[in-house]
Length: 269
Image (cartoon, rainbow, N blue to C red; front, side, top):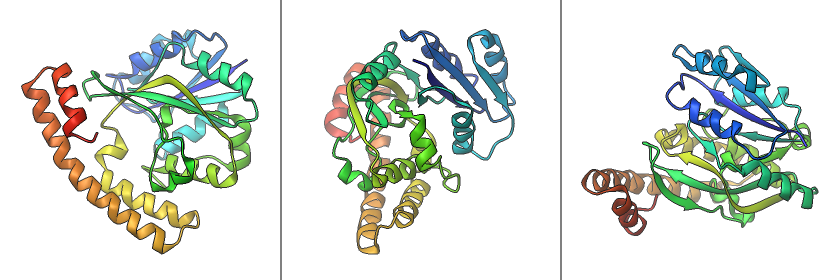
């Protein structure tokens, strides 16, 4: 069973190698690996060329942001299931095998997703995180982990690709659209991916919150639902900035093991 894995990159020479190796080391053998580069000016393309024999196809050209690059990769993919893993993140060795096994038992489902290891920006382990399985509350905010998601190609054909009007939170919009459309989700209680915190949506949280508010309105939610949520997100973001600063200080003063143990009690990351 062919699985398509897509990595989108832009000036990612420091992090791409680990991502690519996690694809090459998968225990499932029938993988089509696609890389979509946004016209990198560092050594990213050289890294891709070094592994060209293990890549199904790649391209490097200017794009209209990360979700435009994802859409390009999805259009090129030929696998029955499609996974997206960005440069800097990486799969567990048996991630694809776990997804394929679940798909064979639950082929009526369209989107498969699982657990994720959250990493600090330096790549050290922070904690294991499981998604909120109550999708009826998904509109409250992103509660699934995009790097763990594998989507049946027919779902993209039926419900569309990522809306590139949104530069930060188009994945929130896409999942919400699929939930509203009645797409079946299947949760795999297994670590699928490792995610390095500090991505675009984290660094631009205020803009991400604004996009999420627009996404709720776009998908038919009313003002009396949206505005209290937006206010809650804003307050949470302000608190999180303080907690993140505290966590950074704790990590400077203590070992990762001690800092992470302390953070689980005093910091809501």
